[in-house]
Image (cartoon, rainbow, N blue to C red; front, side):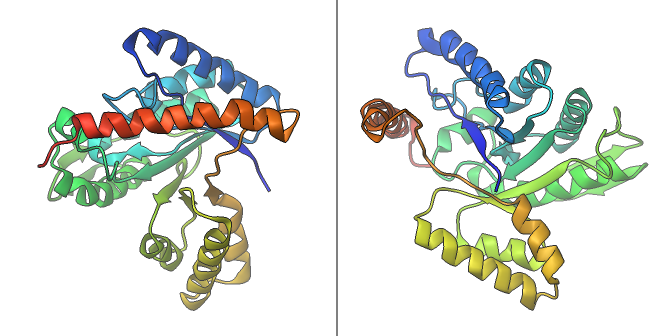
Length: 271
C-alpha cells in the first residue's frame, strides 16, 4: 500500500493567497521528508478553493523543492487546457522531475460552471474535449509528424519538444466519480483514482473493477499491476490523539467545505 498527500489548501480571502500558496509549497517538501509516496495537486479557478489554482505551474516549484516523491495531478481539468500546450508542459515537468510525474486527468468540475465561463468553454463540451485531448497527448508524446482533425482541435505537430523523460510517456490515469466511468476504465485496462466514497462502497467498486477487467480478457498480473496504480481519496487528519485530531481537523474541514458551498451559491448561475 502506498500513501500520498493531496495538497488542496483553500484561501477564503484574496489577502490570504500568498500565505496559503507558500504554506502549500512547504507542505509539499514536508510530504517528501515524511516518506510519503506521492503529493497530489488539484485545479480550481476563481473561487479560492485551491489556493495555487494552476497545478502545472505549481508542480514546477514542487519538482525543484523535492527529489524522490511522485508529483501527481488530481486532476487536470482537461476542458480548460489546449492539448498541445499541456503536452509540452507535462513533458517539461517530466524532465525537471526526472520521471516523477503522474498525469491525473478529468473532464473538469461537474459543479463550478463559473470556471468554464472564465475560460469561454461551454460545459457541454467538457467530456468531448477530455476524450479528444487524451488521444492528442499520447500521440504527441509518442509519434512525429502528427496531424489531428477533430471536433474541438485541428493541429499539426512535427515533433514535440522537449521529448518526454519517461518512455513511452508519463503515467496517465483518469479521475472517476461514477461506477460507469470506473467500469469503462476496467474495460480499457486502465488504472484510475477514485473520489471520496464510503469504505464499503469503495470495496464494492474495486470488486466490480477487477471483475470487469477479468471479463475484458485481462489476466491476474495485469489486474494486480493496475490495482497498484490506482489511488483512493480519503479525508484524514493526523495528530497525537483522536481527540486532538478532531479538535483541530474537524473545524478546518468544515470551514473549507462551507467556503466552497458559499462560493458555488454565489458564483454559479443558470447556463
